[in-house]
Image (tube, rainbow, N blue to C red; front, top):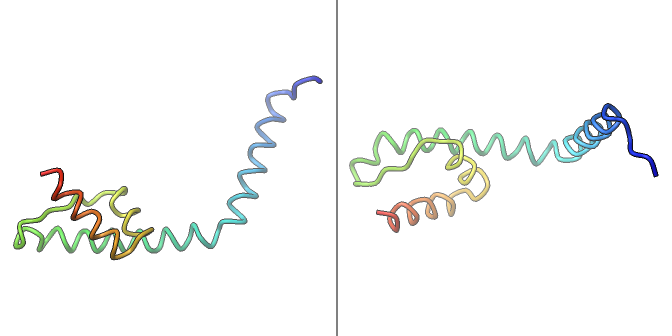
Length: 85
């Protein structure tokens, strides 16, 4: 069996990526929307969190956790912050 030329492999990989994005467009768009809301919630919490003595970082990882898990994700982030201090 002969190997494919380099450009054929990249074209095949690109087609597979496009097919995967086409099939997952709704879940990815939903996660992006929920993560942006989570990022906004983190930004608001960072403004008032010092009143409670708690601070969470406003970053993409925390926003993705909030986007994927919702309110339980917020509790998870608070518990991780509490354990690590």
